[in-house]
Length: 187
Image 1 (cartoon, helix red, strand yellow):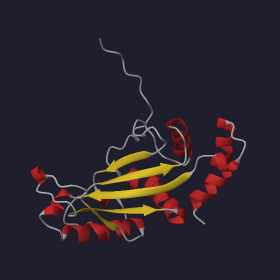
Image 2 (tube, helix red, strand yellow):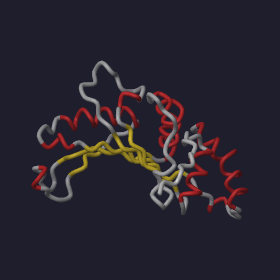
Image 3 (cartoon, one colour):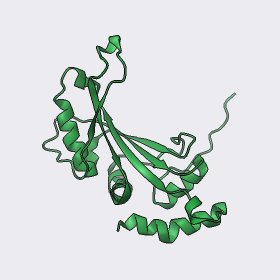
């Protein structure tokens, strides 16, 4: 069983029940899934780039990615409906906990000048999205073979109803949020 799942059951779940006054264990928010997405606009001119991105995303998540296609045509970008423009993976279960553990304990500390994640990136429904600008911070990526730096979006979906509960859950799971600094009001 994943190390982080054990931590959730032994530490995070009781802390949430105490903090928010849940009566049932089933009502306590938990991680539902993690979606990793690489959007590639340059795949319009060179579709072979999707194969490389797919291999890298598969190495990072341990799961085969699916190719995302354009939903509608945009003439200014020379994009037609149905053209492949990205790859994505949805991880659940033990793989999700292992990916989250690697993200928090290995990948994020490797980011240069890292001062913590913004607590403002919640969507209002308890989901958190962070952008990674360089795929080379993942230890699974071989820097020698990498031809191009590409970024990705990592969306952590929780069963929390609001952002406060999700923030509490993710911070207890080890997510390194930046300390909020009070900004002076400028008139």
